[in-house]
Amino acid sequence: MIFFAVVEFIYSVKDKEIASFLKSVGILLVAAIIAIGMNATSLLTTYEYSQYTMRGKSNGLTIDTQSSQQGLSKDYITQWSYGIGETMTLLIPDFYGGASVGKLGMKSKTAQHLKNLGVPNSQTKEIISQMPLYWGNQPGTSGPVYLGAIVIFLFVLSLFIVDRRTKWWLIPVIILTLMLSWGKNFMPLTDFFIDHVPLYNKFRTVSMTLVAAGFAVALLAFLAMKEIYEGNISKEKLIKPLLISVGITGGITLLFVLIPSLAGNFVSPQDTQFQGDFSFLRETLPQDRKAMLRSDAFRSLAFIVLGGLILWTYLKGYLKKNVSIALLGFFILLDMFPVAKRYLNDDNFTAKRPKQLVQMTPADKMVLQDKTQYRVLDATVNLFNDATPSYFHKNIGGYHAAKLRRYQELINMQLEGEIGKLFDAFGKATTPESILPTLDSLGVLNMLNLKYIIYNKEAPPLVNPYNNGNAWFVENIRVAADANEEMKLLGEIDTKRELVIDKSLASNLPATLTPDSVSTIALKSYKPNHLIYSVDAKSNQVAVFSEIFYDKGWKATIDGNEVPYTRVNYLLRGMSLKAGTYDLEFRFDPDSYRIGNTLALICSILLLLGIVGYMYFAFRKRKYIVKTN
Image 1 (tube, rainbow, N blue to C red):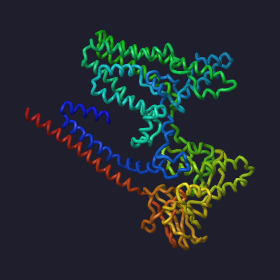
Image 2: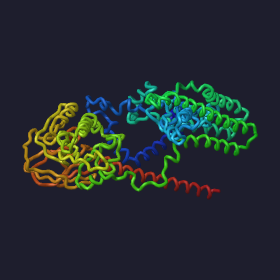
Image 3: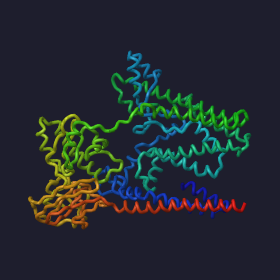
Image 4: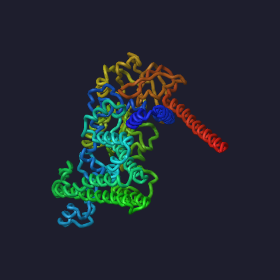
């Protein structure tokens, strides 16, 4: 948009149409303000939440090297970086082998070798249907970014025949987004964008910028068709750029048909895993990848020649306009559709969607018999990369692309160690009772109210009798000098009896406490956005709640009056409570949500008024024209 605006501004100055340009900008700004306002609810709440996530600012924890930086780490952001040479997939789809797991044909070198070994055809087909064909630098891919051979040919043609005013903003878009997609393979530009361009360090998978490049390439390609078929340029003048464009794109593909090894050695870092009986794959797979590149290069060459031939016959008068357009459209579809079917096909669909995507296991059923509030650790899945246990339970693990930074830091610094300790105990346990001392020592997991551990989907879960519960009173307060000390002390204290608080927040709690074993606090009612605790305190107490501290929405009240609470134990809620018997309520009522709803309503009304006003004045204008005629 910036490139477009700059080019339009330059031309408006040159053509002395600055007033028209400013009028257009003004209308667009009003439209943008209304559009943003109508989405204010999600924008404001997401922005507010993002400040507390892995994509937000640092909490000052420097001992956790994984999360001490602002936003996401550069390694994380650039993990899926398109290779510079891999950009050739825009023209030749299987230039780098296609998908990480792909299918070979029965005529492939791998299939032939298996046949020579005496492997039955049915088994050979099964083996070659799951081959690691991609040999680029990305950790994995479901398929290449392919824009189409004819589209690329038309794009090259557009460079000769589309007006400069359009090219001057679209070509920089293509160049910039291509270079950004290279990520770690072109770090000077990537570093600049991560460090200086707002919001860029909030995203990962830099290869996504190829969406913008693809849009600009396709737009220029079809603008080239517009120039040809609308007769803006004489047919005689189009012949030369047409032949040059076929020569450039066809010549590149022909080069890889003849010398595919120009692309590289076709060896993937993963090929080293093949040992023993499968060591032959280290030889056959590179040969098959080479054959795939050559085949697709020839395929792209054929479509380029076809596209060029269709346009040439039209320009020479052998084809009518509509027939030429229909043929070009047909061959573009014939080019793109089969490549798409390689990666999105019948195997990706089922005849009927199951009523429940995540099926309940016997272990899940046993856990759900408990109607109290607790958390579950499912050791049968990848704890922090699998969110399926959250379908039924309040989950210690799970996955979210924008986890709260404090929880991610807790995972890195405390939970991984305690979970590792727990798994070690499982490995050495002779009876369920032998694990109990280990469970009692898991101070951080216990403060997260871990009650059930699923270690076998078909077996009863392990019950942790040492969890701290939903809320509890503590007897001692430890003050930490900074985030590093707070995290360190959290792994050392007895979380059932002590809490740790940052010194900047220490004034929110009393300096000394009076232990009282008679006082109680319990969760009385639970809803995701409304918690009610029953308090029976014989003296002033300090409570810790096994709930995440997030003051941008959660408000505490006693008898309808708002009361303050603070952050303790690095990420939980803590509060000083007076003696007495009463209910304490936490409600989630973020100001950003209410303000966003108000703005969305106002802007929606403005949009409707604008539409009605436009229709009214358009009707009056039409009526006036009819009357005067």
